[in-house]
Image (tube, rainbow, N blue to C red; front, side):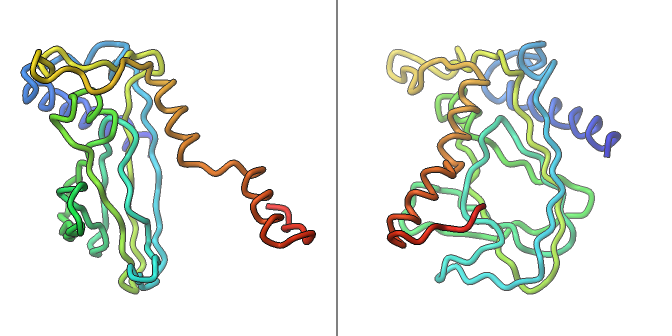
Length: 204
């Protein structure tokens, strides 16, 4: 796992260089120490049990979401399950499977890259559907260092297209996102108490 972590980070840095070139930046733009020179890189081993998803009933292996950070590398087994929506603003959303490819990473772009690039790149909306087979994957989440200032890249703004987001430190941004998506247990308990009257919810 430690070797995988080290080598996956080099893959992430190589992809970041391609992203930099695509945005008209120097290819080593993201290699700076405050960016991917000393990044936050988290490895997560995932097991989806052999259940069958029912989207109409809100039952998923993983519900629709985008990742917070810069990019995510995803290695999967041979089982289908991952779906993406290419246009997350579409109504209704159109979902399509990502075919597993042995020896390859799926690269999800994150919300931080969307913010950094002033929406030139859009984060990847994705979900997982279970089809009755056990499914395994390795997710590798990559973001810049805590003290990196995430502000609109110079090649992604103009008088006609000003920055859509204010500058923010990476650690502040990540903290905000965690708070937005993780339930406050006190609020959760209070809500249950209100619904059950005087009956108290069991301890979580």
